[in-house]
Image (cartoon, rainbow, N blue to C red; front, side):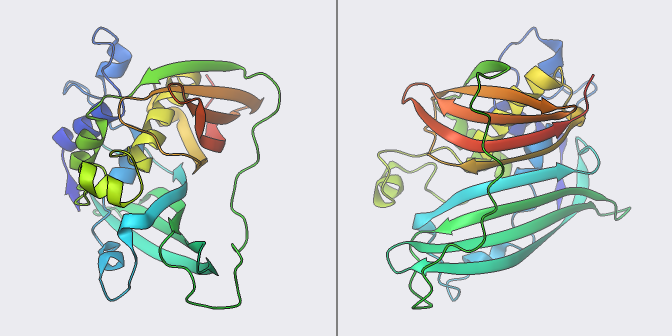
Length: 277
């Protein structure tokens, strides 16, 4: 799998970089001179290399009712602005929660530089298969919890508000090579139970990373080392998001993201590691 500078810039634009056209720190992700890849590009590349088998009709996953439940990224080395990578996707477990509750699929994925073999990123995550429960009668459990620690009950250390664009989902699907219609078609979104197309979980995760890097890393994405969060409510393109941060130790923080128009938490139980200045 290869990606170029245009794809890296498209991903950065989809998660809000370049919103301030005179901020040189943001422009480094969306303008060719000294271009850097924004870290969450890792979620948007390599998805079809070997995870495509999940879309095989014989497996039976109901994609119209599948939701991203949790994502974690650990960056072992910074992503290049353009590169050839090898993506390897593995299913860790599929747990039946019952006929009316669906199933939980846990996975991990690695991204390696194709030439050197160096490990660049490790991804872990959970998909909620809302239309696929009941295949193992008598279980009805969710399996072991992978949720990060709750955010502290005290006031946050700092926060930032970031806008998403009405066309954010359309931009992100191009950066990610996403061929599903849930994030573009109002008809398909309604069939899946949403009033209108929703933002991809990877995009809302990227917007949240944008907030973390602006507050904790002075817009230097190479200083973000790890990030993990649960998706607790859908984000609609155009929502304004508030990212709150609690410093929990040297180079460690908890975070939470809220949709301000609807007053609902959309990413929760967030934790991250970063290089302190």
